[in-house]
Image 1 (cartoon, rainbow, N blue to C red):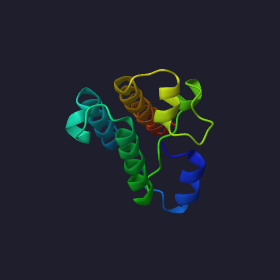
Image 2 (image 1 turned 120 degrees about the vertical axis):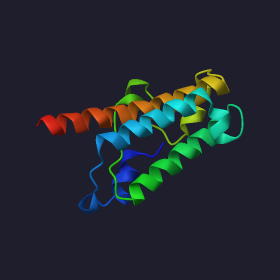
Image 3 (image 1 turned 90 degrees about the vertical axis):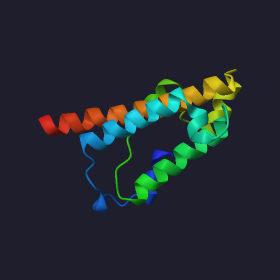
Image 4 (image 1 turned 120 degrees about the horizontal axis):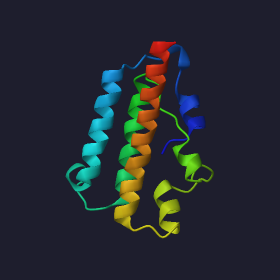
Length: 126
């Protein structure tokens, strides 16, 4: 996962593009589909590094297109936020299997996007 510090360095807030609810809902649905069949999207069964890299490049593309990235406390609540190790390595150290790691990485990403959806909803009400 890309760190918020790195995202802020790369992302020019002045060119931020507002993302609408429909796009975020589609992204969440897409990640939920990936979770049910990760091998269809990543070509290998339960390869955490491949999934983690895919998430990273998805986020990088989003940043370069000028969209804001979702942020949530998903990593903080899991005590996974402070280290230079990859997310997959941190989860493996906790004893998770590759299948569990893939599922957790995707869950974290979905949680980030659901938080952004809540923020968009709150902005619309504000």
